[in-house]
Image 1 (tube, rainbow, N blue to C red):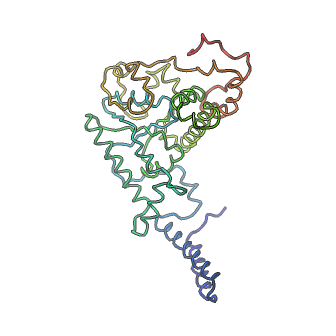
Image 2: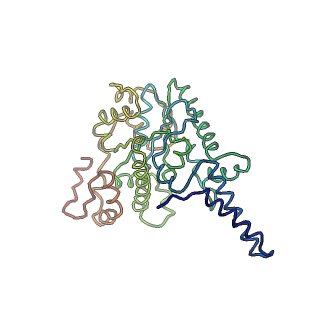
Image 3: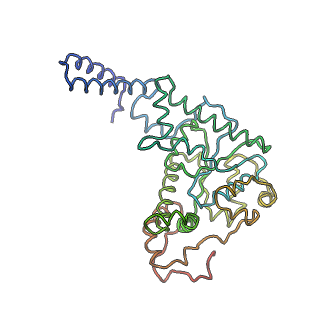
Length: 351
């Protein structure tokens, strides 16, 4: 298919405007004129930003990083669904002498929030500031530098060289966040078995579930599916900048998993990092948000917090299997069995 040429379309729109102006004054002429003026402004904006056609959208899936943003260090984010080991991972990274992984601020989430019945705050501001000559890329640069400066100053106060930010509520806005950071950022995506993650989330969100309809586990599992599917889609389009970690691998073989994480971050692996998790003082971010289990264990990694779902009633397992299995398979997990013969007794919990 021949790529769309915006220049040709722009010329055609200009000709059409000339034709419209020859029409007698009427409501139809007014509507047509307004619509084509709007189209002309949109095409003009695309040409200013260097977009040459719809074909480029597909040709530039793997974006080259923009060089016009100066960061203190390479922006790095932990992404994943809630109750999937993100706090444990942040504790591990924060134990490294070069990395500061601070409290959950949702600073990136702010840009991706939607205004009531409208676009994201970033998209809204980009449209509002366009008449001032502020391009979308320029606005993105400003957001990125603000976020980088906040976290950089925090890292400096901790005596560290770089920052990692945990962002759990941007799963439907990864591409927007990535664009804001000029396609320079890297991401550590951690996933946990959906049924265990849903159980932990349902327990944590108990009060909220008292005011919603439906089974809490099913509600949380659907959230888990949406979040992880979005992260997997993003990772497939950016395989060099997204490192995938499974919670179960982190807790059963923490040293090897940590080595691969720090290799991805191009940071030296510290042989004592697992012991340092118990000794290095951390900011109270675990108290403020997230799962407090890692603080309760004093930094010890607990490998037993998995496979809780095997004790569930078989009827419930069969129901959630239909929801979870496609995503579980995509994440590299075995599908959830639905036969009563496969259900394990309670004494194997955590195995």
